[in-house]
Length: 258
Image 1 (cartoon, one colour):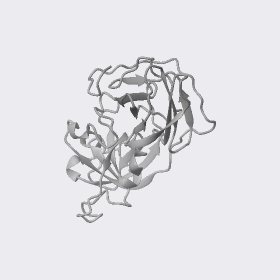
Image 2: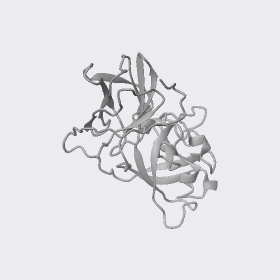
Image 3: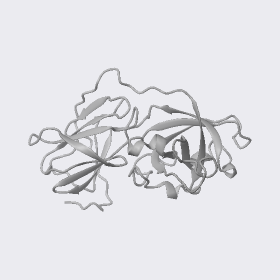
Image 4: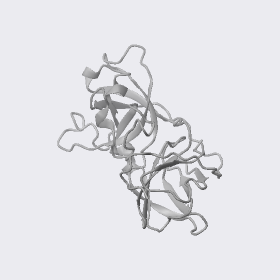
């Protein structure tokens, strides 16, 4: 069995069935005002990892078009994976044409209680704020501005392929990091089932975009059931892994939220 530090990622496409609740598709929300800053440099090296647990954002498909959310939007990790359009507005530092960018939430911008909310403590509750990767920020504004007013709206996430499950843990504990979620982009509830040996086991929210189950689940294919935090839409991905699945590997279902 592979260890949790295994570097090689195996993406196995399952013959998954799907159950989807009706009329629950996520639709774009209205434009709202906020502010945006950036962190890190042009390489976006500091954006890798983060409070959602996505690890290397190139490997997980998110790239550098990402944002750290203030706690109001992060919602204790339930905001992980959500997608936003935004454009710089009302500042001489906005790029000509007010280009619209799309970013995925991959990190938390924590409060800074030592600073005033309007002067350095940009992510203090109840402010709505986006701390972008520098490459994303530079697509809409001059980086020297530091902070710019923006208009933003939450939009459906468009993903290629199915939902991915990066598995960690041991023989008695399964931890699954959930990535590449389409639609609303978020996960509010999750269950796992091991072949025909168990019923659906409710997984508890660990942190960020990870869910855990304390059970012996080895030796049979794993199926997952997920419910969106926002829309309550539920899908069932059957036999996502083979019977000889290993921790340290990533498995991909053939289905995703619409």
